[in-house]
Amino acid sequence: MAKWADYLISAVKYDKEHKHIEEVKAHEDKEDSIGAAKIYSRMEIVNAIGRGVTFVTIYKNDKGSWNKGQKVFVVTINSKKYIKTVENNREEDNLENLPEF
Image (cartoon, rainbow, N blue to C red; front, top):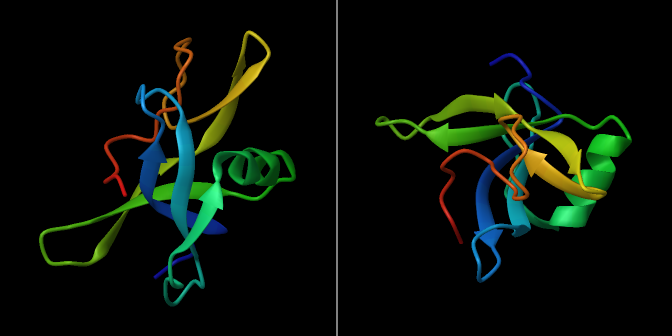
């Protein structure tokens, strides 16, 4: 397996309004394997991306293997930072349709 990114996000935890991600489950991309999931806060992801750490989403396919999703990036809207896979002007986080925990 080729390295997809530094870390791979597999699940998210949203706030009550379902607009902002509070935490994510991310795995280290070890190139030949995927590390165990660890929970990171939204701000840890924002800060890591700011330092040049790369993230992509991942999801399980029908065979139970991981598939690569989309690149994760930070968008600033009205002085607030959002983590997204799609660039839009919505004031909310958006990491595709990842499962929630």
